[in-house]
Image (cartoon, rainbow, N blue to C red; front, side, top):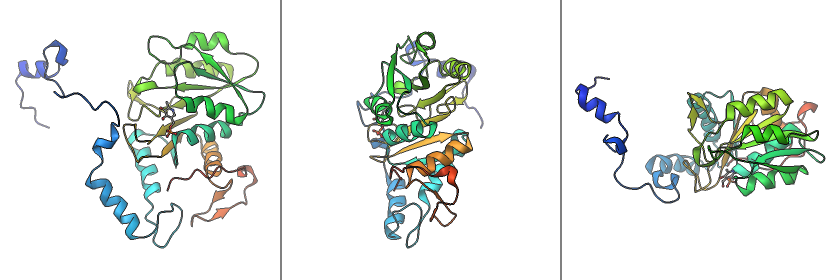
Length: 269
Ligand SMILES: Cc1ncc(COP(=O)(O)O)c(C=O)c1O
């Protein structure tokens, strides 16, 4: 694109507003419900298509519109993930991810002291024990404290990108690799965040997002998980559903015994 700014004004435009540059906005951001302010005719049009088709179920219907498939495909192409799975909430996504890792009674999951209550409940509901790790100046998990606290029962690490902060996810991923631990990245508050071009959700074995009303992108309720690992994706797909895989027509296909679990009924509508 042609740049119309002279050298000096381009320099000013590139400066932070606090240093004399042009402010990106001159009114405060909304105190809460950030995503809700952006719901408009685009969303209305898409919802109308589903309602007009009387097909609000993702896998089949009178005239299924494949909206959830579309969201998952667009998420993958926008953020560069291999697999995405829409679910009914960020809390469900956390629980499904831990279940897909096989976390359960006798295991410990490391979690930062600054998090959301769903992080704790997801761990407790698997039967595992949460162990608190300090945060550092990034407001996210301190990798040094994590390494100090890893013990013989540690099975997984749940790192939380609070308020869009990405913390030291690269270092935490290295610690997990070294100690052979699963890494779950809670990006409920970090949709669209990245570090050096690497998107949130790509540091962990699984990353999760929330579309609850108080998130950057919202549908009132909703969630999504991403993974680069096909086996984990298939486990999550069965777990979020009735405990089985589905065929290309959206019908249950229990033939593959590797993907048979107790499902959680957490599909995205
Ligand atoms: C960090 C964090 N994790 C998990 C969740 C849970 O998401 P949801 O409300 O969609 O269940 C939230 C949002 O409330 C959150 O802020």
